[in-house]
Image (cartoon, rainbow, N blue to C red; front, side):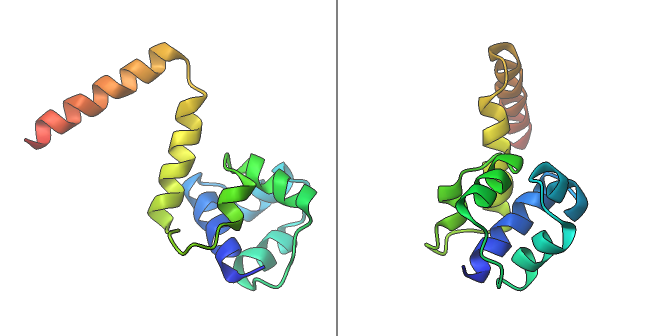
Length: 108
């Protein structure tokens, strides 16, 4: 596993405003284990553990493992937002779309 995995996990975790402890609890790990993945890149999570981390961060294992080099904190925040958006009821989605349209109009 490369540092990219740790960078992506950390970016998603911070975008979701989760502490190390909160993420560790959500994926049945220890705070130290998550810290090592994020900061050292030396831990190699099992497939099962990686699936739990991905689920806790509302992303996919494919995204976490993709090493195409296109990841950034903004990309991670966008990914987390869109995952959450996909699960929203239609009325909420419509409100968000209208709000975005209003914000865009203010920019013009």
